[in-house]
Image (cartoon, rainbow, N blue to C red; front, side, top):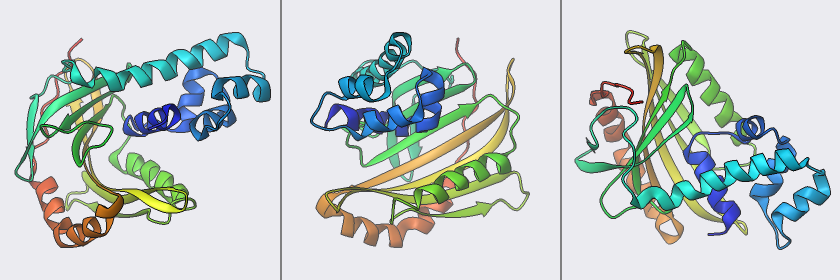
Length: 252
């Protein structure tokens, strides 16, 4: 996997858009897209020549990208339990262990859980918990996700989604498919199931928690992946609905 592919993969896993990264780094969106696209020429040199970045912004961008890159190598180390929940979770009769955590900003925390023997670069299944300290409604957050997925459909023929609202209107499920291709050949497909719920976090107030399950298929396994998904999608939905959302206690 090339460096720029790692950067893109990490950004996607963190649920950070290219626009988000541009705003955080102070570098324009066009440059972020150029870095992720990559080519045979030095990516950074090309960015400097083509977009004439100020030294300060380039250093800032490199720092952020380097931090994202290093987060992959830190997977093998003991991650920080930032949400104060169990480090071992179960979903659909599979055990998951806390493998990575991050705090992109004061109001956004994330933790990833993987089955034994898997890693974030090439996982088959993953649980992710996103916590946003915000008073945004579940409906508003879901609409943002729908807008993101609708835009992705323009470049991803696999992309599709379905939204399910709980009977009391307080929670939402969004299940969706994503695909990645290289040289006009599908290389990765990913099924995601996001559960959105508003909660109260001690000493922080209202928050939105997104409890997410992801399952991937690669290369020659993509066709059987789709066949399996067709048979088991409903069971994944039922499992997510019946799952107890962990109680969050933010650790400083």
